[in-house]
Length: 113
Image (cartoon, rainbow, N blue to C red; front, side, top):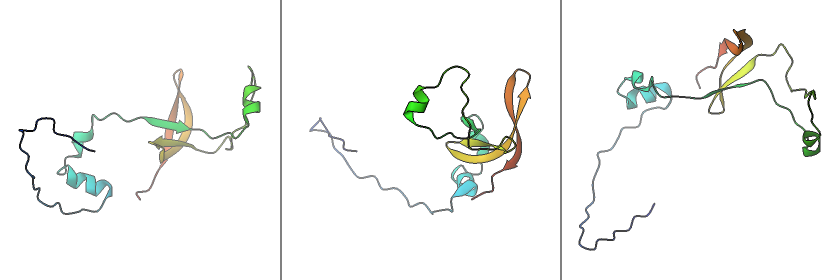
């Protein structure tokens, strides 16, 4: 990023910052960066996506779809669905009905990397 000073009379000086000691990444690194106060992240909204599976098709087949068309996905009906956070699988589970909505019953949580 380039910043141009439009005020020729303004003075600039270099600010020196103390060096950080690098911590290993992961949750412990986040905890260290937040001073162990992970609860500071409690109200940060995140969007989870439930992936049932994928379909590979052509544009012609896609354009030919009409009401009552069926697309067969790449997973068996009894295979767990993926729960994704920013495109990364964080858990797997079973689709369930919760009143009039779909839900997911978590059956497996991803291992820490």
